[in-house]
Length: 178
Image (tube, rainbow, N blue to C red; front, side):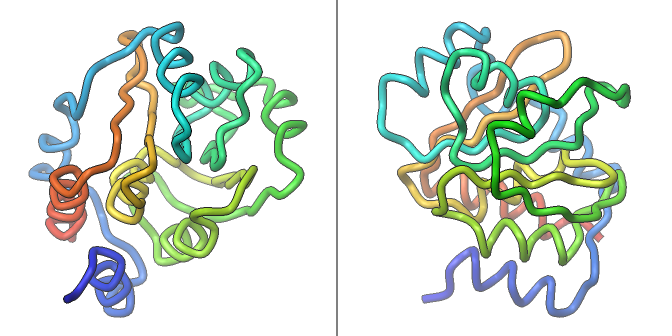
């Protein structure tokens, strides 16, 4: 039985990167779970024993400011393309991997570093470029005991518990990128 990890490995063996297109942009723009306030997000991740992945600086800072260090954080030290003070993030992660990922793309390098480090604790991934598209990649690669969260500008935090439906949906979005 082939897994989503196997499918993604084969996809990235054939392509150095995948590019966002109009079809996938529309698929990603909708809600993919419940939009939470920072308080509700903290409540969700503090009550249960999930592996937590945050994608984006503000959602990562929200967790860190509440005393919760996400197991994996993917960030670029920018919010809405403006640089931020990332001292709290940098201090929270002693194990920071660096990767290049241009805006609107998913690179083989980003896929590899996420895949290699999933399941490890306190891994920071500092992206040079843009990290936004890492969320569907994390969903497609994650196990069921995982929550993937990312910021939705001016709305809140989208946080999803991984299940088979979410994995298949994320994989279908990624496979439609070209």
